[in-house]
Length: 159
Length: 159
DNA sequence: GTCAGTGCAAACTTTTTGCAACTAC
DNA sequence: GTAGTTGCAAAAAGTTTGCACTGAC
Image (cartoon, rainbow over all chains, first blue to last red; front, side, top):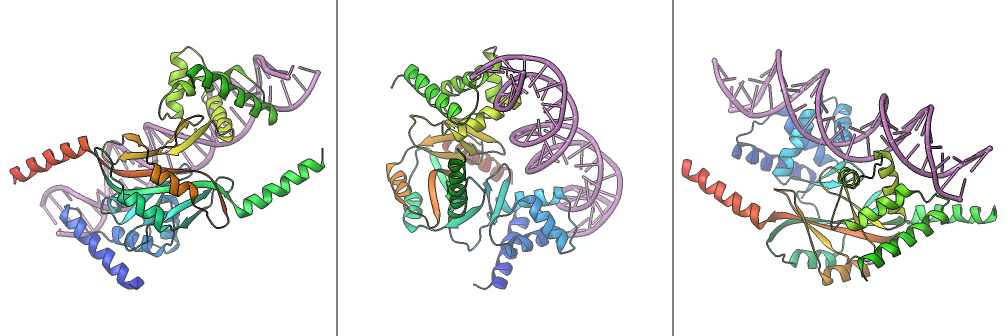
């Protein structure tokens, strides 16, 4: 599916969602949806606000929070909690992926693993209906590891 | 291992950690460690503060945050990000478990699944050294599901 | 015309920081 | 004695809320 097709499709889904739930189709809401679907990877509300400002579309913080809540409910985005702040991500037509989080630099990267995906999605839980899931693997990225090794060598020399 | 044994052991590990890193062994730090290891399940910094207060041990918010950071570094606790606030959990001598989070009531419960655990722990990642991981499964718990069904039936009747 | 939605600012929550007083070493 | 820690309070960061105005229906 091309990017324009996806944008059309998610607008459609959002329109349906809004009317089904008695919400209005405001320009702010669709501008925010479009912007989100142009972003690859994660973003925070603050980042989204800056992006909107950069494209000369003025929206208030409150409207962004409001819209993000609606989009979550419409299942058009997913929410993550990384470093003390909520991060969001588009979710229509995207691959289920998992996250590698470096505990040194805080950077988040994504990976796919069919085996992990399969076993989690097939799992059943007692008294609980699963909808979706997040897997975060914490560790240290190769770059931080390198820097850390250099730091430790220096420390040993100075002794 | 008995609870007293575990308390002894983690105090030991923390002592080692502190001296190895040139930190002082203050009564506040050990009181906080003891309290944490007496709590089953998750807790927030605010809860921890209340618990400390309840046992008549006065500590400042800053000291709790400071100590929690040290304990994370010493690998004696793990951190989770659930509902807009960091949640912590003791990690020494505890089973690796995963989390079911109800998106209606926000309640968090735990489950174990050897299959999931095995496949994640055996996975290798490019340019990344994994240390630990968190798996959060979002969905709806049986109680909220029941309530939701009742609510929907009422809504249909009133139409 | 009406009421949901928006913008703005204030309030609230969670976490971090600066600094004087304290204490483990 | 001295530097790392603590307590307190202020600041910062992220999110929610109240209210007057606006615009989608």
